[in-house]
Image (cartoon, rainbow, N blue to C red):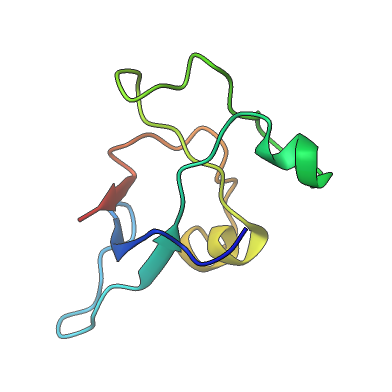
Length: 88
């Protein structure tokens, strides 16, 4: 809730940007595992965060439909790897 605490450009390695085009900038927050349950936000696909998703664990993300459609048009964004999505 509130304003995003972080923002940065994002790159999808499977979809390189055309020459001279700037990458999209996304806003994002770090949240607790119960965040979506607390707000009663349904998960469409994939999994929720767990307590095992810590700073020392492999990075995971939950994206909204708009971001999934923009970055992976016609693809399933679930199980993409860190090599597929780079936040710089």
